[in-house]
Image 1 (cartoon, rainbow, N blue to C red):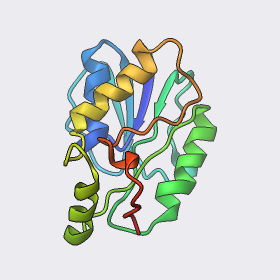
Image 2: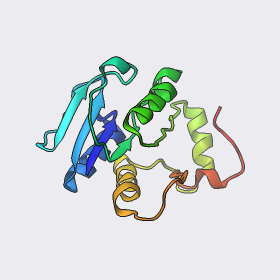
Image 3: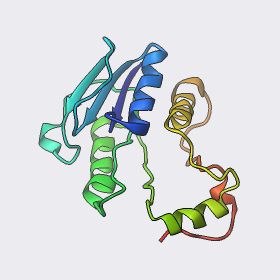
Image 4: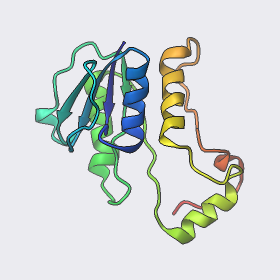
Length: 158
């Protein structure tokens, strides 16, 4: 399958791209930074996802993983507007979730999360792979992969 992943230079995006590559897919990545992924089945585009006029022309994308985002800036242009634009351009739906780096807030969130940790990038990559390749029936769902954080009634996020 032809897979497009945004934000592939590190972390979750890189792990997702590598998961698809390890399972024999053609992967295209878009990131502001250079890549460290070395595979004949991987094509990397250095591009800011907010630069709509210079987004690569990739035809027939079958799976889009909108991973690019920022947790250190209050940047609606990256975290929302670019996500919408890329989704419209490549015709697939996706979403992202920001992570907060405030230690006090982190401890409050972990107190509410039964597993007491976030998923690793590799765990999220396997989940993304399952939803888009192995899964053959579930579609149009908003599935929360949060280690049980959402089952508690105490809302912590600011």
